[in-house]
Image (cartoon, rainbow, N blue to C red; front, top):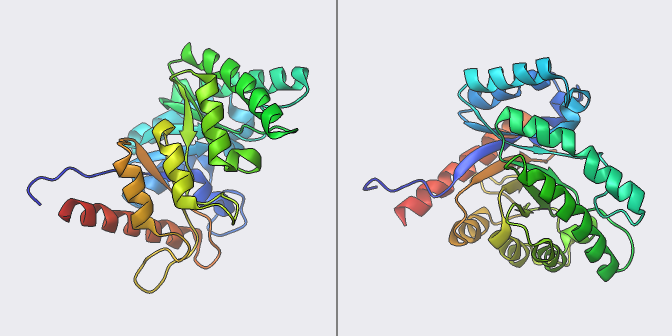
Length: 275
């Protein structure tokens, strides 16, 4: 291969194990074992989901243990995906401010764990333009705070207007801060949207990428998403960060879904290096 550089790095999104972490699939997993679990599959970076240590954001002893486990397993902590802290585009100004401030503890936790970003939701209500204005306001305020921590605030296409790439790119441009960006997810688009064009629109602002997977054929290819085409869009955009494995299917166990997604991404790495 003439010393070709790997075209993208692979991380593991904690959501891939959400059933095991909730005890809905065996063997049950504890949040503290996430880093070791990733390492077991040869994955060197992890992306946490706040739901799995919801009440521990300000528990320094617990966060220290998380940090130690990641370090001991040689695993990098990339980001925290934050849910359940209110809508950053809430039409009620008090609730919007509360949502912004609810994320401060996750900025602290992300900084402590060595992450570069928190992933947030730009939820709102109202007309297209009203939501544009409201989400911009909440994101702008949170991103300004995040600058103090040298952290990014990134928005995933995650339902509502955030799954409209045109709207989301307009929001990011209006926020106008270098640390506010996107986390394109290969899924999470409405059926009418072209997911390839949608991801391509989000990539110039990307500081994370979610390789969402559901099911695989006998060749190990994803059945709903052309992974090679998606990864070419990601790499061609100049993106240099991690691409996370986010298995969300029902056909395989979570463990097998992670293995299958990792294998597919590694196959694409080889194809790209050999091209």
